Image 1 (cartoon, one colour):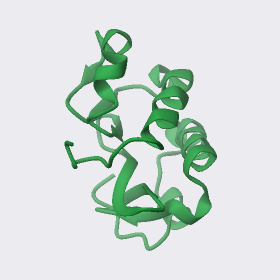
Image 2 (tube, one colour):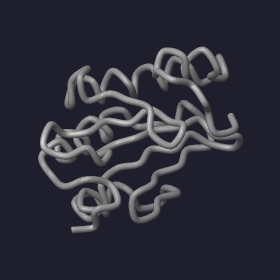
Image 3 (tube, rainbow, N blue to C red):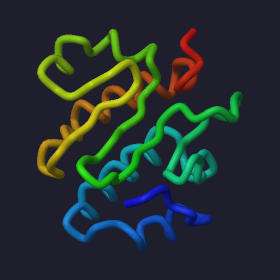
Length: 124
């Protein structure tokens, strides 16, 4: 999807490719588990989650033309370096070409740590 102009995450889901919807809803549920509904908002055209002490996103995800992207704190990535090996992963982004490639167990553990550590893009 091109950058969404959706005002809410529910509106964003109305635009999602149906082939990706189930896994994206699972990603959302995982984020809500760790950050809670009050932390959810739209940021840069994608669902994002903030901690109560900081308005900068701690986690975000998007459905792009060629892949699903998960944006996790760059402080969390080094903790999972071994498990991220072989994945299309940068400093704070993990990309999956197919929905079935998304490892929800790994995401759950990463988000548990993200809920405790600093924000995406904060770098510190």
